[in-house]
Amino acid sequence: VDNFGLGLLLNTKQIKRMISSYVGENAEFERQYLTGELEVELTPQGTLAERIRAGGAGVPAFFTATGYGTLIQEGGSPIKYNKDGSIAISSEKREVREFNGRNYIMEQAITGDFALIKAWKADKAGNIIFR
Image (tube, rainbow, N blue to C red):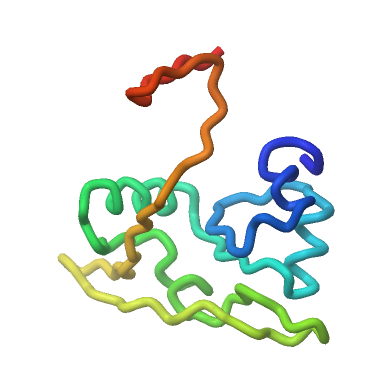
């Protein structure tokens, strides 16, 4: 949504890079990405959740079968474009390992400095209530 949530931060160009599983139909997001103003790394939803969980648990990386045999594993997915439409930054090829006859790719954990959470009520300890 253009004027809600991350759309507000996009409109004021406060986001440099997004790691996301779904970006929706935000016209400003699309414009910034295609003109090279915004870096975007797309990742499957479950993998994104596990990357965040792993980072919080102090696990630096993990292996998952999700994404094996896709552009995620092969690398080369556009993360950032140049103004002329050519690719400035592309995703890196993932390490592949086989366990019990099945192939897996290595994903690195995500650690954050802060999180933006919308809730109805919160206390200083971080407990929140949603409505």
